[in-house]
Image (tube, protein in one colour):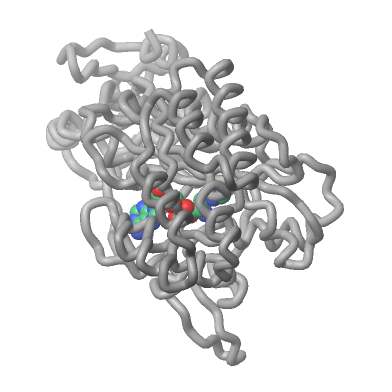
Length: 420
Ligand code: HAM
């Protein structure tokens, strides 16, 4: 696991801030769930690949517990238990660290951060669209320029497997293989599980159907699955979601893929992932999962959600030559020329901070010139030098670091002068 310092830590928190802003704008309330949960709860519908990568241990009470690999299970547990009677729709936001024993490589870490949004209580396509639109808003808010949504529907593939009576467990393994793009092995597994020749042909054809012209792609899917009524229904649901989305967020770039599957097993409807161009790992993913709350004993509560990988968003911004836009703020250093003036220096610092200015006070006892050259290096915009002669007249020296100019200013007007 990594230590995050300087910009890495700053970027992560900035993206987190933007994610929180979006949660507020869309009416999502934050929930804070524990980092450690019962293994069974977290493992329930996580999928074989993810299950193998959990950090699992026995606690001192001999309970089998694990570090959370995602938020969805914990939030669903909340909705199935403590929030069972909360009015619907219920919009919940979480942000924090997650743990998966992945092989560390570019964009893949054992500890990473997600901003997670879940919408409970609606099975309508507009709920799916809200999650997609919110995701788009967040990507715009952080300043990501080039990205697209890969979108599909688990109902298309699963209903063909259902048609031939393939068990849920076998379907899950086939979905895992498709998620890893191991198409041949997936088809072979379907064959061994009892898929008919015509279903295998249909599946194989579907795996090659994808494209940006969503209407045309969905019509093609409908044509291929015309003898599977549930698959047609699933494709129709996807068509409806996309048509509302396009009407509301005209600029969203979609790639519809019939053979798209996700490793997580709880999905029951529309699924999607977001890719930043120039990066082949997803910066976020989500979808509809209408059965999970029921599995946790909370009755039938349809749900749809998304999680964005904060670390990967930060990498995607860097790759596209953008940094998370910071507001150009003044940063002030206050230096006392001698120890007897430290009280004044603290008072002036607090006065400026109360007005919202970022202030660092020289705490190393360095000379003014040493403190100033260090301030230069660290991007300080103004230095306030507290000297004995000036302070007697309620004045200080204000140095404009970029311009390399200095003037004597009254403490009363210091804030206005810095703000100018
Ligand atoms: P997920 O696709 O497993 O979905 O993860 C979502 C995002 O978390 C990924 O797209 C990626 O950006 C980030 N992520 C995952 N693993 C790592 C890693 N090892 N290192 C860095 N980033 C990573 C979920 O977690 C679902 N719970 C999303 C969801 C919410 N579905 C419905 N509601």
